Image (cartoon, rainbow, N blue to C red; front, top):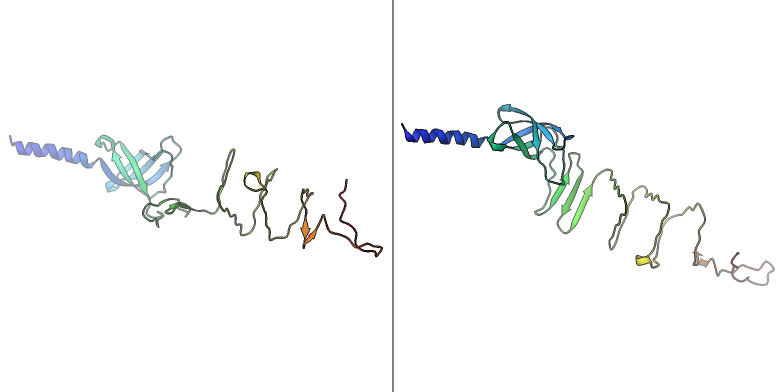
Length: 215
């Protein structure tokens, strides 16, 4: 018996088995309704696979488009037990990240870009925030810019300084008010005080005193 040939045959069998452990494929369909996402994909020589599980990192979920490329790991080197460990789509991958940066994106161009310098850039067409209880936006300077309008809908609106202190509000706009206005302080229009302005005496003897508060 040729010992070398026997050893070569043994190693050839193992080498073929090892070559089946990791491979590349192309996704053809994704089923995202199951507890573990299931996919169909084609491998080498157009071999087709159905019902393969796609593992994703905890807390993250995505549904890649058909045509996305994937890396396959065959458990126990068995071609009938493939698992997808990563998938990427070069057709819509969002680049432009500097070293150390992270970007979450979709094929439609929406993205969240965690940039260097502690800056986060979010881009989308419509944004919905559904907060069940409290929402707090805190910063040294906060701007809200609406190119067409800004709408606030609430049964109660409170504006004030930090910690309940009296603040200042400035508006460069025309104001239309439905309902009454109650104030504990004075109102001035074009420099004229609502509380302390006098009126000309109709009798011609001079000016009246300031207005008297009503009951």
